Length: 156
Image 1 (cartoon, rainbow, N blue to C red):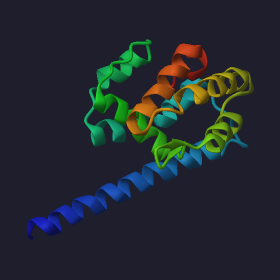
Image 2 (image 1 turned 180 degrees about the horizontal axis):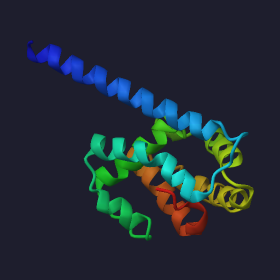
Image 3 (image 1 turned 60 degrees about the vertical axis):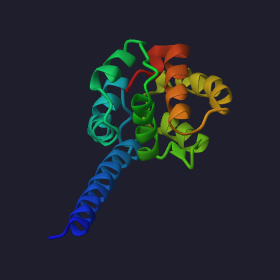
């Protein structure tokens, strides 16, 4: 098998993997009429996607653990980790935040007690991060959300 065919096979496997992860995640997130989730349950549902994004962008998992404690490294790969997560949850598209998708996920996925603080954080942060693009946009949204109310947003 030549190198081009090997690359094509790897790309196909990667595409299949990302499709499967996105499908499972979106099924979990969108199936909220049956069950809303606590922040711990959201964290658990996101684990396969987190692993995929860590592997895809090559970020250090310790940076993600640190971010959960409020320590955000200004590392490009780490910023792109957040973009990967947001793209695969359909919260980000074409280097922009899809506000409707973010709002829908908050309103349908989270337990009622988390909705008001998460919505306030979203409203606060969206106006602040609009000037950014790409990986930096995703990173700044996560960082702003954490800084605004870590108890409502800390599920990365």
